[in-house]
Length: 472
Image 1 (cartoon, rainbow, N blue to C red):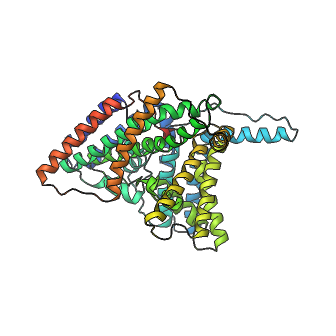
Image 2: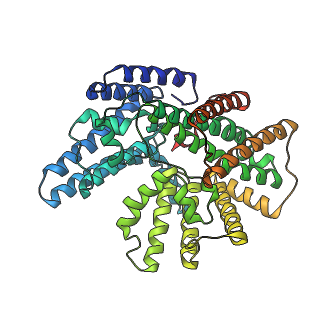
Image 3: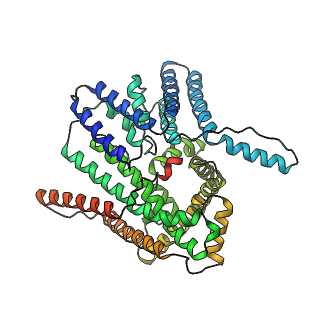
């Protein structure tokens, strides 16, 4: 069930009405309702894959109970290892097995060995990378002693499957979300309005910004041979905003939906394209994932506690793993490796250690945007060959973009939406908060919501396109 579908626009109000119709003291009944709604939400894609969600939930739940029960460190570690191995094995089978098998087969044939590696025709379950990492984070936190074990299975199952953030995050931490399922949430006007504002802005980012940019981006990246260097450049400049509007839009809708129900999810994006270094970009982009890799991969590898050479290796390994997390394709491997290398260079040169102002700030911002956009070409391209064609076309074969009148209209609409998006984000970046009386503020909020809904309905692409990060 997509957020940008009629089904969800019917599903969510029904869940809200039923949730608040139950007395706030009946926490268990409310949680069971949300659990049932979450599994119904997930099963709208492929009912059978709910078994994988349940399997991951049961494995991490039992492992955490074992970690809390056994007194010896060795027994605790065995429980954790079992949780990691079983969950990552499922993720590997569905996401990476065929990719690895095809590459092993190609390598063997290059050596003169014609060996067929069996493959499986398995569809990638929606959200498997997200809920697997969320569940594994809980197991690790219980092992480290930084979070208490949850003994009530329905409550823990709801933590893993909570429908607003189930399929594309934010990847929540147990210390933040689990305790909220034991709180009594009452229908609160401030929460509802705050949630609706986030949702409406999220829908604007998805339907007007992302999907408008996507009309031209997809036409170019999916048919590389039919376009020239100018078209590659335009598409490569639009894609950063397509993926930002798509993914940040999803996150805002998820956070808004949860807020209406009284829950607070973690911030996932913080105006990333205002960053003045690649390191700062990763403090602003997909925050829940970048902090997950920092806490559960980078720091266990040694983090900053080791010498410079080892620190650079740790950074590179972390970002290569992050790239592979995004998909079973060499493009994602190279995208992650490139970001890792850029961060190593920044640390070696001391870039990003101080605040920049004036011309220096503009230079660092422009350089960061160009480098991040270049890396996005690897992320979006269907193959390394396509990425090479696009990058070399932009650099070595500049030309006027090959754009039809219809595409020119689409790009113009996308740029107008981008101007509105960046204006709003610039005001947020500078902390602009107009001083209004409570009545004027209320009128302004309702006018803002009405106007933004109208703009989204008039200029949004209402075809129900899937969110990009659902494939990860």
